[in-house]
Image (cartoon, rainbow, N blue to C red; front, side, top):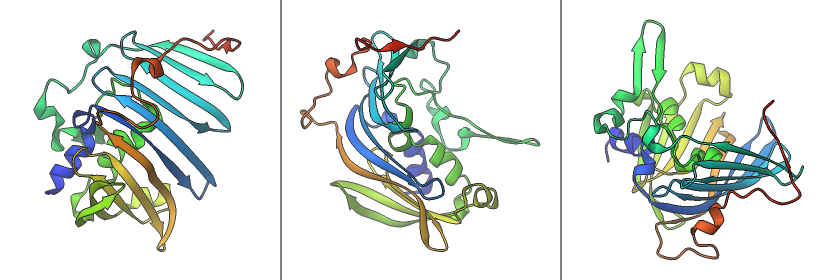
Length: 244
């Protein structure tokens, strides 16, 4: 697998799976934070759901592609927000332009610097995109292909075949992230980021670890990805937060 192939898969991962269910945990040593996210995503119907504790609150995010509605529920404080989203037909995106999905086209260089070109996410999956649609990692970490290499072309994580990438950060990221190098474990078939480790003096200071994942199964364990789990009806007894 060539570098452009794996980077391109990461930049366009939502094109390579239909339904996925799983969980991952993000650890950040500098902020002493540990966030575990459970997710359910259907890229055909643009449905998504993610659940986890964010900034001390138990948050549930649900997007229903049929009604173009996103519901955010704070179960700790018993409040919710409802937002209308933009339908895929109305999104200005790269989806209809295959050449626009290429690695090269996702960087626009000028005398003022670089502009990173992101695809829209019609599923509105939120923080689950850190793993399932890892555009930021692919664009920022892998921008200079001379600074990273494919260490292993075949390794296995949770039954998924992955490619392992070793890389060094540019000076800008060393200053801002406190890490000097990183390692990525990327699912070969889908471009999903299954694991990430950032290092400072060989010590792991930031990480993402997938705890479970099921991709395009006919039947998913415990909870199938049917319409019921993407219900955007506000819970009874909760207060709505509105923009004034």
